Length: 114
Image 1 (cartoon, rainbow, N blue to C red):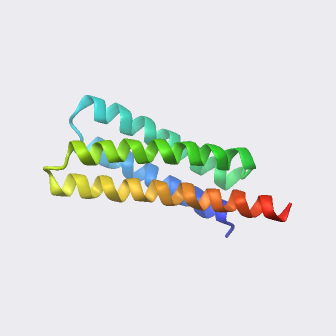
Image 2: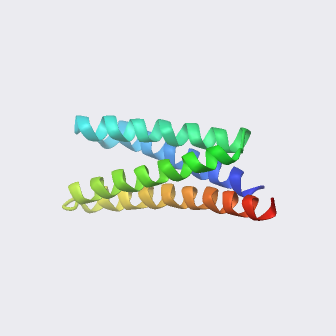
């Protein structure tokens, strides 16, 4: 499987976990809206990386990865008193960053071979 497909699968996993955990556990309206929007963006990037892995999608993956990191760092800080909540946020943040890095590596290696 190519790196772009791996990145897509990682983004889809992050999106699915983010949305499910938000629906089940989050009660704050701002957190709910922000994480659902981030999850939808991650799912779109994931699907595009799997089915249409063009260079522009990798760039958008990096943009979403930076936003994802900021969102989940903010959530981790906000929920620092709740161990389970912030460890889940750290895990989800790391998963999104890893997906963005895999897409970046794909973009970088595609640029080197051109």
